[in-house]
Amino acid sequence: MSTQIILPRILQVGAGASREAGTIIQALGCQRPLIVTDKMMVQLGYVAGIQESLTALNIVSDVFDETVPEPTVSSIQAGVDKVRNGNYDAIIAIGGGSPIDSAKAISILGKYGGVMRDYKFPRLVSEPGLPIVAIPTTAGTGSEATRVTIITDESNDEKMLCVGIGFMPTAALVDYELTLSLPPRTTADTGIDALTHAMEAYVSKKASLYSDSQAIEAMKLLAPNLRRAYHDGSDREAREAMMLGSTLAGVAFSNASVALVHGMSRPIGAFYHVPHGLSNAMLLPAVTQYSIPAAAERYADCARAMGVADVADTVDVANTKLMTELYAINEELQVPTPEQFGISREHFFGNLETMAEQALASGSPSNNPRVPSADEIVEIYKQLW
View 1 (cartoon, rainbow, N blue to C red):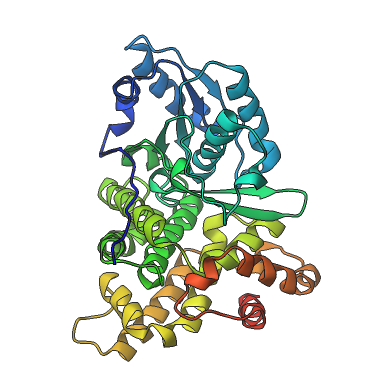
View 2: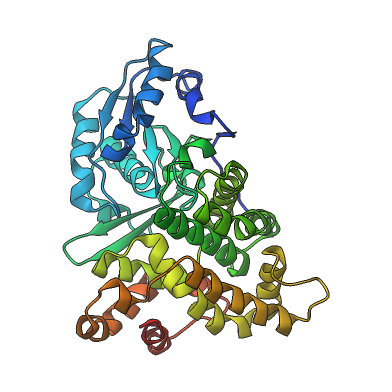
Protein backbone atom coordinates (compact mmCIF):
# COMPACT_ATOMS: atom_id res chain seq x y z
CA MET A 1 0.00 0.00 0.00
CA SER A 2 1.33 3.43 -0.91
CA THR A 3 1.27 6.58 1.22
CA GLN A 4 0.66 10.09 -0.10
CA ILE A 5 3.05 12.67 1.37
CA ILE A 6 2.11 16.37 1.28
CA LEU A 7 4.81 18.98 1.99
CA PRO A 8 5.43 22.69 1.39
CA ARG A 9 6.84 23.27 -2.10
CA ILE A 10 9.74 25.25 -0.58
CA LEU A 11 11.27 24.56 2.84
CA GLN A 12 14.03 27.01 3.82
CA VAL A 13 15.69 26.09 7.10
CA GLY A 14 18.30 27.83 9.24
CA ALA A 15 19.50 31.14 10.65
CA GLY A 16 18.28 34.06 8.56
CA ALA A 17 15.75 32.02 6.57
CA SER A 18 13.05 34.60 7.29
CA ARG A 19 15.05 37.25 5.46
CA GLU A 20 14.46 35.34 2.23
CA ALA A 21 10.74 36.22 2.22
CA GLY A 22 11.08 38.68 -0.66
CA THR A 23 13.06 36.24 -2.79
CA ILE A 24 10.52 33.49 -2.15
CA ILE A 25 7.52 35.70 -2.98
CA GLN A 26 9.26 36.73 -6.20
CA ALA A 27 10.06 33.09 -7.06
CA LEU A 28 6.36 32.25 -6.65
CA GLY A 29 5.52 34.93 -9.21
CA CYS A 30 3.65 37.05 -6.67
CA GLN A 31 3.78 40.82 -6.26
CA ARG A 32 1.11 41.83 -3.73
CA PRO A 33 1.34 39.87 -0.44
CA LEU A 34 -0.72 40.44 2.70
CA ILE A 35 1.25 39.87 5.89
CA VAL A 36 -0.92 38.09 8.49
CA THR A 37 0.43 38.35 12.01
CA ASP A 38 -0.24 39.67 15.52
CA LYS A 39 0.68 42.91 17.24
CA MET A 40 3.57 41.35 19.18
CA MET A 41 5.34 40.42 15.94
CA VAL A 42 4.99 44.05 14.85
CA GLN A 43 6.35 45.32 18.18
CA LEU A 44 9.33 42.96 18.05
CA GLY A 45 10.26 44.31 14.62
CA TYR A 46 9.85 40.96 12.88
CA VAL A 47 7.23 42.30 10.47
CA ALA A 48 9.44 45.27 9.58
CA GLY A 49 12.23 42.83 8.74
CA ILE A 50 9.93 40.93 6.39
CA GLN A 51 8.81 44.16 4.74
CA GLU A 52 12.43 45.22 4.23
CA SER A 53 13.13 42.02 2.30
CA LEU A 54 10.04 42.72 0.17
CA THR A 55 10.75 46.40 -0.42
CA ALA A 56 14.29 45.57 -1.59
CA LEU A 57 12.65 43.76 -4.51
CA ASN A 58 10.01 46.44 -5.11
CA ILE A 59 7.24 44.27 -3.65
CA VAL A 60 4.48 46.22 -1.92
CA SER A 61 2.80 44.60 1.09
CA ASP A 62 0.03 45.35 3.58
CA VAL A 63 -0.28 44.08 7.16
CA PHE A 64 -3.18 42.45 8.99
CA ASP A 65 -2.07 42.23 12.64
CA GLU A 66 -5.35 41.42 14.37
CA THR A 67 -4.93 37.67 14.81
CA VAL A 68 -5.45 36.34 18.35
CA PRO A 69 -4.26 33.30 20.32
CA GLU A 70 -6.50 30.30 19.58
CA PRO A 71 -8.17 31.91 16.51
CA THR A 72 -11.93 32.12 16.26
CA VAL A 73 -14.47 32.56 13.49
CA SER A 74 -14.87 36.25 14.39
CA SER A 75 -11.14 36.95 14.87
CA ILE A 76 -10.30 35.97 11.29
CA GLN A 77 -13.25 37.74 9.67
CA ALA A 78 -11.54 41.13 9.28
CA GLY A 79 -8.66 39.38 7.53
CA VAL A 80 -11.07 37.54 5.24
CA ASP A 81 -12.78 40.84 4.40
CA LYS A 82 -9.41 42.47 3.72
CA VAL A 83 -8.49 39.73 1.23
CA ARG A 84 -11.89 39.80 -0.47
CA ASN A 85 -11.75 43.59 -0.88
CA GLY A 86 -8.06 43.76 -1.77
CA ASN A 87 -5.95 42.70 -4.69
CA TYR A 88 -3.59 40.31 -2.91
CA ASP A 89 -1.93 37.39 -4.65
CA ALA A 90 -0.20 35.78 -1.63
CA ILE A 91 -0.17 35.68 2.16
CA ILE A 92 2.89 35.81 4.39
CA ALA A 93 2.08 34.39 7.82
CA ILE A 94 4.51 35.21 10.62
CA GLY A 95 4.12 34.23 14.26
CA GLY A 96 3.20 31.20 16.31
CA GLY A 97 0.61 28.63 15.36
CA SER A 98 -2.29 31.04 15.78
CA PRO A 99 -1.27 33.57 13.08
CA ILE A 100 -0.34 30.73 10.72
CA ASP A 101 -3.62 28.89 11.35
CA SER A 102 -5.48 32.20 10.90
CA ALA A 103 -3.67 32.78 7.60
CA LYS A 104 -4.65 29.35 6.33
CA ALA A 105 -8.32 30.05 7.02
CA ILE A 106 -8.11 33.56 5.56
CA SER A 107 -6.46 32.15 2.42
CA ILE A 108 -9.35 29.75 1.74
CA LEU A 109 -12.28 31.90 2.89
CA GLY A 110 -10.86 34.99 1.21
CA LYS A 111 -10.70 33.20 -2.12
CA TYR A 112 -13.79 30.99 -2.04
CA GLY A 113 -16.15 32.59 0.49
CA GLY A 114 -18.53 30.70 2.76
CA VAL A 115 -18.03 30.22 6.49
CA MET A 116 -15.41 28.21 8.35
CA ARG A 117 -17.88 25.48 9.30
CA ASP A 118 -18.27 24.72 5.57
CA TYR A 119 -14.65 23.54 5.59
CA LYS A 120 -14.74 21.49 8.80
CA PHE A 121 -13.54 17.87 8.84
CA PRO A 122 -14.62 15.35 7.51
CA ARG A 123 -14.63 17.57 4.43
CA LEU A 124 -11.17 17.50 2.84
CA VAL A 125 -10.24 20.89 1.41
CA SER A 126 -8.25 20.20 -1.76
CA GLU A 127 -8.83 23.48 -3.60
CA PRO A 128 -5.82 25.84 -3.40
CA GLY A 129 -6.26 29.16 -1.63
CA LEU A 130 -3.88 32.10 -1.94
CA PRO A 131 -0.26 30.87 -1.72
CA ILE A 132 1.01 31.05 1.87
CA VAL A 133 4.60 31.68 2.95
CA ALA A 134 4.66 30.58 6.60
CA ILE A 135 7.32 31.91 8.98
CA PRO A 136 7.04 30.31 12.44
CA THR A 137 8.33 32.14 15.52
CA THR A 138 7.74 29.30 17.98
CA ALA A 139 9.13 25.77 18.03
CA GLY A 140 5.86 24.04 18.61
CA THR A 141 2.85 23.83 16.35
CA GLY A 142 4.61 22.79 13.14
CA SER A 143 1.75 24.55 11.33
CA GLU A 144 4.20 25.77 8.68
CA ALA A 145 4.40 22.18 7.41
CA THR A 146 0.86 20.87 7.98
CA ARG A 147 -2.35 20.65 5.99
CA VAL A 148 -4.39 21.43 9.09
CA THR A 149 -5.91 24.51 10.70
CA ILE A 150 -8.02 24.78 13.85
CA ILE A 151 -10.55 27.58 14.25
CA THR A 152 -12.92 27.92 17.23
CA ASP A 153 -16.64 28.50 16.66
CA GLU A 154 -17.56 30.82 19.54
CA SER A 155 -21.26 30.03 19.18
CA ASN A 156 -20.76 26.59 20.74
CA ASP A 157 -17.11 26.69 21.94
CA GLU A 158 -16.09 24.03 19.41
CA LYS A 159 -12.58 23.89 18.03
CA MET A 160 -13.18 22.97 14.40
CA LEU A 161 -10.55 20.77 12.78
CA CYS A 162 -10.10 21.70 9.11
CA VAL A 163 -7.92 19.48 6.93
CA GLY A 164 -6.75 19.29 3.33
CA ILE A 165 -4.05 20.10 0.80
CA GLY A 166 -5.58 23.56 0.45
CA PHE A 167 -4.29 24.45 3.93
CA MET A 168 -0.67 23.43 3.25
CA PRO A 169 1.63 26.47 3.02
CA THR A 170 3.38 26.83 -0.31
CA ALA A 171 6.62 27.75 1.42
CA ALA A 172 7.96 27.58 4.97
CA LEU A 173 10.87 29.69 6.20
CA VAL A 174 12.12 28.04 9.39
CA ASP A 175 14.40 30.54 11.14
CA TYR A 176 15.32 29.54 14.70
CA GLU A 177 16.70 33.03 15.40
CA LEU A 178 13.09 34.23 15.64
CA THR A 179 12.61 32.01 18.73
CA LEU A 180 15.45 33.52 20.77
CA SER A 181 13.06 36.07 22.30
CA LEU A 182 10.46 33.50 23.41
CA PRO A 183 9.69 33.54 27.16
CA PRO A 184 10.08 30.30 29.16
CA ARG A 185 6.31 29.60 29.45
CA THR A 186 5.79 29.79 25.68
CA THR A 187 8.96 27.76 25.09
CA ALA A 188 7.64 25.04 27.39
CA ASP A 189 4.10 24.90 26.04
CA THR A 190 5.07 24.93 22.37
CA GLY A 191 7.95 22.51 22.96
CA ILE A 192 5.74 19.90 24.63
CA ASP A 193 3.22 20.47 21.83
CA ALA A 194 5.91 19.54 19.29
CA LEU A 195 6.95 16.47 21.30
CA THR A 196 3.29 15.41 21.44
CA HIS A 197 3.01 15.77 17.66
CA ALA A 198 6.01 13.50 17.15
CA MET A 199 4.85 10.86 19.63
CA GLU A 200 1.27 10.80 18.35
CA ALA A 201 2.40 10.61 14.72
CA TYR A 202 4.58 7.62 15.60
CA VAL A 203 1.87 5.67 17.42
CA SER A 204 -0.98 6.73 15.07
CA LYS A 205 -2.83 4.02 13.19
CA LYS A 206 -2.12 6.07 10.05
CA ALA A 207 1.65 6.06 10.56
CA SER A 208 3.88 5.08 7.65
CA LEU A 209 7.59 4.39 7.19
CA TYR A 210 7.97 8.00 5.98
CA SER A 211 6.14 9.63 8.89
CA ASP A 212 7.97 7.31 11.31
CA SER A 213 11.33 8.58 10.05
CA GLN A 214 10.31 12.20 10.60
CA ALA A 215 8.76 11.51 14.01
CA ILE A 216 11.79 9.63 15.35
CA GLU A 217 14.20 12.36 14.23
CA ALA A 218 11.91 14.99 15.74
CA MET A 219 11.94 13.24 19.12
CA LYS A 220 15.74 12.96 18.98
CA LEU A 221 15.98 16.72 18.50
CA LEU A 222 13.21 17.83 20.84
CA ALA A 223 13.56 15.74 23.99
CA PRO A 224 17.23 16.52 24.85
CA ASN A 225 16.86 20.24 24.08
CA LEU A 226 13.48 21.18 25.55
CA ARG A 227 14.79 21.76 29.07
CA ARG A 228 17.86 23.58 27.74
CA ALA A 229 15.77 26.03 25.72
CA TYR A 230 13.37 26.51 28.64
CA HIS A 231 16.09 27.36 31.15
CA ASP A 232 18.28 29.39 28.75
CA GLY A 233 16.42 31.03 25.88
CA SER A 234 19.67 32.30 24.38
CA ASP A 235 21.01 28.74 23.86
CA ARG A 236 21.24 28.88 20.07
CA GLU A 237 22.12 25.21 19.64
CA ALA A 238 19.06 24.14 21.64
CA ARG A 239 16.83 26.65 19.87
CA GLU A 240 17.96 25.42 16.46
CA ALA A 241 17.34 21.79 17.41
CA MET A 242 13.90 22.64 18.81
CA MET A 243 12.92 24.58 15.68
CA LEU A 244 13.88 21.83 13.25
CA GLY A 245 12.38 19.19 15.53
CA SER A 246 9.10 21.10 15.58
CA THR A 247 8.97 21.29 11.79
CA LEU A 248 9.78 17.59 11.40
CA ALA A 249 7.09 16.75 13.96
CA GLY A 250 4.68 18.87 11.92
CA VAL A 251 5.59 16.96 8.78
CA ALA A 252 5.11 13.68 10.66
CA PHE A 253 1.65 14.39 12.08
CA SER A 254 0.42 16.15 8.96
CA ASN A 255 1.04 12.91 7.10
CA ALA A 256 0.09 10.46 9.87
CA SER A 257 -2.51 12.40 11.89
CA VAL A 258 -2.57 13.14 15.59
CA ALA A 259 -4.45 10.98 18.06
CA LEU A 260 -6.14 10.99 21.46
CA VAL A 261 -4.14 13.77 23.14
CA HIS A 262 -5.18 16.27 20.49
CA GLY A 263 -8.74 15.03 20.39
CA MET A 264 -9.09 15.64 24.13
CA SER A 265 -7.02 18.82 24.10
CA ARG A 266 -9.23 20.84 21.75
CA PRO A 267 -12.32 20.94 24.04
CA ILE A 268 -10.17 22.05 27.01
CA GLY A 269 -8.82 24.89 24.90
CA ALA A 270 -12.21 25.86 23.50
CA PHE A 271 -14.11 25.88 26.80
CA TYR A 272 -11.43 27.15 29.17
CA HIS A 273 -9.08 29.12 26.90
CA VAL A 274 -6.09 26.99 27.83
CA PRO A 275 -3.31 27.49 25.23
CA HIS A 276 -3.17 24.51 22.88
CA GLY A 277 0.34 23.40 23.78
CA LEU A 278 -0.41 23.65 27.48
CA SER A 279 -3.57 21.53 27.27
CA ASN A 280 -1.57 18.92 25.32
CA ALA A 281 1.04 18.95 28.08
CA MET A 282 -1.64 18.42 30.72
CA LEU A 283 -2.92 15.38 28.84
CA LEU A 284 0.23 13.72 27.47
CA PRO A 285 1.23 11.60 30.52
CA ALA A 286 -2.28 10.31 31.30
CA VAL A 287 -3.13 9.54 27.65
CA THR A 288 0.24 7.81 27.13
CA GLN A 289 -0.32 5.66 30.21
CA TYR A 290 -3.77 4.71 28.89
CA SER A 291 -2.46 3.93 25.39
CA ILE A 292 0.75 1.99 26.10
CA PRO A 293 -0.95 -1.45 26.43
CA ALA A 294 -2.07 -1.26 22.79
CA ALA A 295 1.31 -0.14 21.34
CA ALA A 296 3.95 -1.02 23.91
CA GLU A 297 6.79 -1.49 21.41
CA ARG A 298 6.01 1.78 19.64
CA TYR A 299 6.05 3.75 22.88
CA ALA A 300 9.30 2.02 23.84
CA ASP A 301 10.75 3.27 20.54
CA CYS A 302 9.69 6.79 21.59
CA ALA A 303 11.53 6.39 24.91
CA ARG A 304 14.69 5.32 23.11
CA ALA A 305 14.47 8.14 20.55
CA MET A 306 14.02 10.64 23.37
CA GLY A 307 17.18 9.32 25.01
CA VAL A 308 15.51 8.20 28.24
CA ALA A 309 15.79 4.45 27.56
CA ASP A 310 18.64 2.31 26.26
CA VAL A 311 18.57 -0.11 23.36
CA ALA A 312 19.17 -2.92 25.85
CA ASP A 313 16.10 -2.02 27.92
CA THR A 314 13.09 -4.27 27.66
CA VAL A 315 9.86 -2.82 26.34
CA ASP A 316 8.39 -2.67 29.85
CA VAL A 317 11.45 -0.96 31.30
CA ALA A 318 11.57 1.53 28.42
CA ASN A 319 7.93 2.44 28.92
CA THR A 320 8.37 2.83 32.66
CA LYS A 321 11.22 5.25 31.92
CA LEU A 322 9.04 7.05 29.35
CA MET A 323 6.27 7.66 31.88
CA THR A 324 8.77 8.86 34.48
CA GLU A 325 10.18 11.30 31.93
CA LEU A 326 6.80 12.69 30.84
CA TYR A 327 5.81 13.45 34.42
CA ALA A 328 9.29 14.88 35.12
CA ILE A 329 9.10 17.22 32.11
CA ASN A 330 5.73 18.55 33.26
CA GLU A 331 7.04 19.12 36.77
CA GLU A 332 10.26 20.85 35.68
CA LEU A 333 8.46 23.00 33.09
CA GLN A 334 5.76 23.86 35.64
CA VAL A 335 2.78 22.55 33.66
CA PRO A 336 -0.31 23.25 35.78
CA THR A 337 -3.25 20.95 36.39
CA PRO A 338 -6.68 22.25 35.30
CA GLU A 339 -7.30 23.20 38.93
CA GLN A 340 -4.00 25.10 39.16
CA PHE A 341 -4.81 26.85 35.87
CA GLY A 342 -7.88 28.31 37.56
CA ILE A 343 -10.65 26.31 35.92
CA SER A 344 -13.88 25.97 37.88
CA ARG A 345 -14.16 22.44 39.30
CA GLU A 346 -17.95 22.53 39.09
CA HIS A 347 -17.94 23.59 35.45
CA PHE A 348 -15.14 21.19 34.47
CA PHE A 349 -16.78 18.12 36.00
CA GLY A 350 -20.22 19.16 34.76
CA ASN A 351 -18.83 19.51 31.24
CA LEU A 352 -16.97 16.20 30.94
CA GLU A 353 -19.55 14.39 28.81
CA THR A 354 -19.77 17.28 26.34
CA MET A 355 -15.99 17.47 26.05
CA ALA A 356 -15.79 13.72 25.51
CA GLU A 357 -18.38 13.93 22.72
CA GLN A 358 -16.47 16.76 21.03
CA ALA A 359 -13.19 14.87 21.38
CA LEU A 360 -14.64 11.79 19.65
CA ALA A 361 -16.34 13.91 16.97
CA SER A 362 -12.97 15.42 15.98
CA GLY A 363 -11.90 12.04 14.58
CA SER A 364 -8.45 12.16 16.20
CA PRO A 365 -9.14 9.53 18.92
CA SER A 366 -9.86 6.94 16.23
CA ASN A 367 -6.18 7.17 15.20
CA ASN A 368 -5.03 6.26 18.71
CA PRO A 369 -3.56 2.76 19.18
CA ARG A 370 -6.18 2.22 21.90
CA VAL A 371 -9.48 3.79 20.86
CA PRO A 372 -11.48 4.96 23.87
CA SER A 373 -15.16 5.10 24.59
CA ALA A 374 -16.74 8.36 25.74
CA ASP A 375 -16.74 7.00 29.31
CA GLU A 376 -13.02 6.23 29.15
CA ILE A 377 -12.31 9.78 27.91
CA VAL A 378 -14.30 11.14 30.84
CA GLU A 379 -12.17 9.08 33.24
CA ILE A 380 -8.93 10.42 31.70
CA TYR A 381 -10.23 13.99 32.05
CA LYS A 382 -10.95 13.28 35.73
CA GLN A 383 -7.36 12.08 36.23
CA LEU A 384 -6.04 15.46 35.11
CA TRP A 385 -7.79 17.44 37.81
